[in-house]
Length: 91
View 1 (cartoon, rainbow, N blue to C red):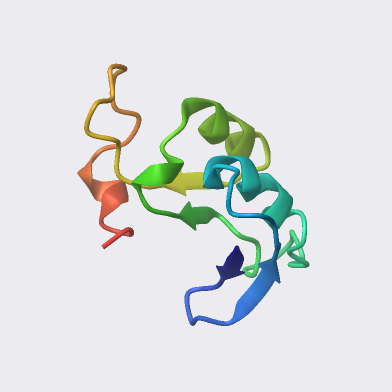
View 2 (view 1 turned 90 degrees about the vertical axis):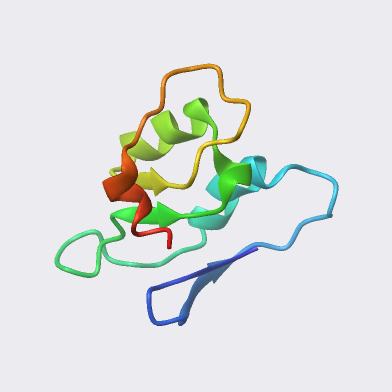
């Protein structure tokens, strides 16, 4: 798994087997990123596909000051956590 910035420059990566779900690999991959947390270079959003739609993941990322932007899964039973304005970043 590779994390890139908005310009496509790699910031961090994590290599693992193909069997674990991507949601479980996100935090290990984010730990490899070496971006200073002060100033305009601090990561504010994580844009991902709908496989990352997980409320526990959103909560853990929010504790780190990162907002997860991804479309909700089709069979989501809970109330949506974001509106269409946030999903414009995904497109």
